[in-house]
Length: 156
Image 1 (cartoon, helix red, strand yellow):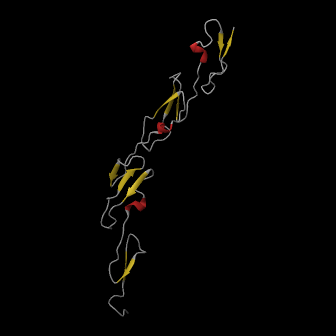
Image 2: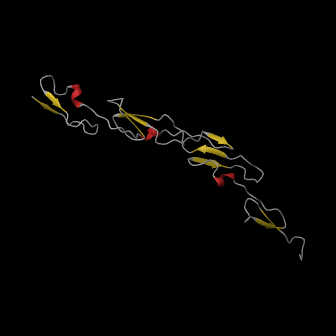
Image 3: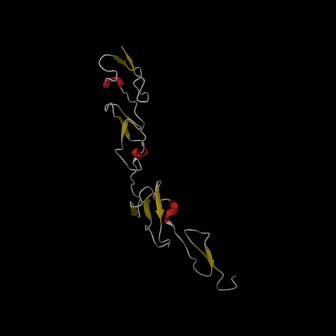
C-alpha cells in the first residue's frame, strides 16, 4: 500500500539506471554508443533525446569534410601517402576506401614489369647498363638488387 500518490519510480528504456521518483526522468539516447559508424570514423549525436533517431553524423577521421548523417560513410585512405614502397619504386593505390587495405601496388622504376601488391617490390638495377666504366673497360654488377647500389666493378 502506497502512503503517497508519489510513491512510483520511472526509468528510461535506453538506460534503466536513470530513474526519477514521481515524474519522468530526463532520458538520454546517444546513438553513437552502439558505434553505428564503424572503425576509422568519428560519431557525433547532436540531439540525444530518445525521440530523435538517425540524427547522428559519421565523419572520416582523416578528412573531416567527408561526412554523412544517419548512415555510415566511405572514407578515403591513401596507403601510398606513407611511402610503403621505398625509393626506386612508384606506389599506386587503386582503391582508397577504408574498407580495403594492403591493395597498393609498388612498381619498380627501373623495370615497370616488376610489381608487388601490398608490399615493396624486389627491384633489380643493372648499374652497368649506363656504361659507368666507359668504352674501354668491362663492367660487372654481381648484385642487381636495388638495395645494393654502387657494388659494380670495372676491369681492364
